[in-house]
Image (cartoon, rainbow, N blue to C red; front, side):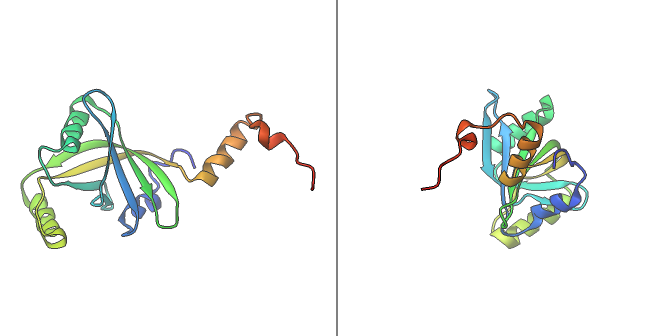
Length: 157
């Protein structure tokens, strides 16, 4: 699929209840920090997630991402085994006001506890990481990059 930053059909799949969503931020040393983030969703204009703890590694990494314009990746794996890498930019962290209160009350209702902040992300790019898609893309782009065992023909027994 390649770059499909405005493909809202894929972004809407963030709202599927059985989808696995992993948020990958970079720590202070540049090492990836993956964390499951069930609260990630598409609200029709942007990607939204909740942060439960102000002191969490993810919250610190997201703050650093805003300060230093670092990339963030969301790995989305749907129930039907489609996989997408969504590259985003951290746009804002909401910690008070009407929008925060609305999310806080929803979190309390759904999970039994509140949140420390609401993170907003701007999608930059989407790539289809489903194995069948990636194999087809690689075969089309690099037809001569074939492992030797695939070239060997086996004699029938």
